[in-house]
Amino acid sequence: MTQTNITLSDAAAKRISKIVSADPGKTALRVSVEGGGCSGFSYKFDLAEDAQSDDIVIEKNDAKVLIDSLSLVYMEGSEIDFVDNLMGQSFQIKNPNAVASCGCGTSFSI
Figure 1 (cartoon, helix red, strand yellow):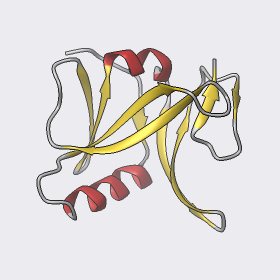
Figure 2 (cartoon, rainbow, N blue to C red):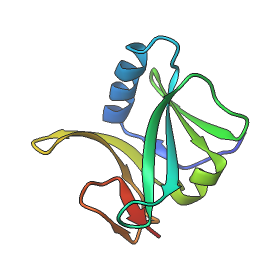
Figure 3 (cartoon, helix red, strand yellow):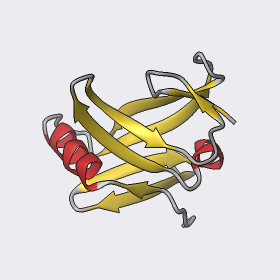
């Protein structure tokens, strides 16, 4: 199993646990990086049933996050957080590899 230094905040773990428990058959939040978005790359969030063979699994409390090996390259050292403020609720990735990001927080460049 691949080791990673991607972390999950308490707020994100709590929210993931709540979302997954409300969707029968789903066991984890899948986070991936795709080409596109206003800054070059964008994060994609999906609910998943099972881990794939190339996934790394991050667990905290009752929450599980899956990240594929290709996305891991772009996310190494990141923190996955959940923010609930006046602007709304969203998962945010605090990525030290990103040299620029957009205002929505889902797009970045390296």
